[in-house]
Amino acid sequence: MAVAGIIAEYNPLHQGHVYLMEETRRRLGAETGIVCVMSGDYVQRGDFALVGKRARAAAAVESGADLVVELPLPWAVSPAPGFALGAVMALEAMGPVTHLVFGSESGSAGALLRLVRSMDEPEFAQCLQQELRNGDSFAAAQQRAVAALLTPEEASLLQFPNNTLGAAYCRALLQLDSSIEPLAIPRVGAAHDSLEQDARFPSASAIRSLLRQGERGMALARMAPAMAERYRQEEALGRAPVFWETCQRAILARLRSMGPQDFAALDGGREGLSNRLFQAAQQAPTLEEVLAQAKTKRYALSRLRRMVLRAWLGLDVSLPGAMPYLRPLAANGAGRALLARMRKTAAVPILMKAGQVRRLAEPARRLFEEEVRAAGLYALAYPDLSAAWGGAEWRAGPVIL
Image (tube, one colour):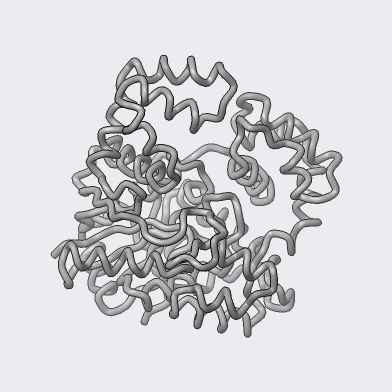
């Protein structure tokens, strides 16, 4: 039986993820098991997740997944290469996963693999450095460097965000010498980060925008049905929607209490961006203005947001060298059967309850404690502060459906 891995930030906030799971089973067989590796309370674009991770994981299972496993925090808030590498490491560590399924604008894993292999050519690094000297963004420089080795048409695939992320998944598979087979499914609906509200499948960004505007009914109508119901439940408990603006004063206080060396640790001290962010944080009265002052055409806004998020969470840019454990967030009956298989095949411990943490090696324990602190800070962004109890990660287990 095929076991498909799907990687997602928000899964399943919008109905495009439901379509992806349905299409996976149509292509690989109705009995295909689906495992999602999902960001926790913070996501790769450098933001707070709109709804807590267990509510989203439960909605994913109610929408077609069998098992949802959390992508640990350091990888979840990394740029695309680190995000992809961590997620693929998690799938590889499970054992039974046969396919990595993702949506992309091209719908061709073969085309993306060809792009990735071109980036391993010695000439690519030389071309990339030359293009970066022109002062454009990394994404634009990378596309031109690939065009120099392949064709402009092939390189143009990197104009599209899901192709770029799919290429990062393919690169991670090659880097890990994984036997997992990539399967790209054509993305349908609105483009990634599009604010178009009437598309077949509006993006998560469009849904978040509607909620920020107070258009709750329109936002709920555009969510996957199971996600809409879980959202209503979290809202009734005072835990949704979660926006970083709720913690804005605390985040600004954190930024203004940091020195230049602290900012350098957020981005590895590269290219002077940390100095721009430091100067903006000392002056600007809002986070939006901090980002606006630090932004230039060379730096993606998501990179700046990730730096601010790492400051809030007390993280630097370093990543663990290996996946320390697998932490299930939700499962159904088929997912529990998959977990039973994984207990025999997994290369790392499977954490079903926090009590297992004390048996982990020291680096894994430190990572879990980091997750506990991050979850406590996330809770401070709940609309109802009386719901923002800390330490919940020590008590919470996976949602079993």
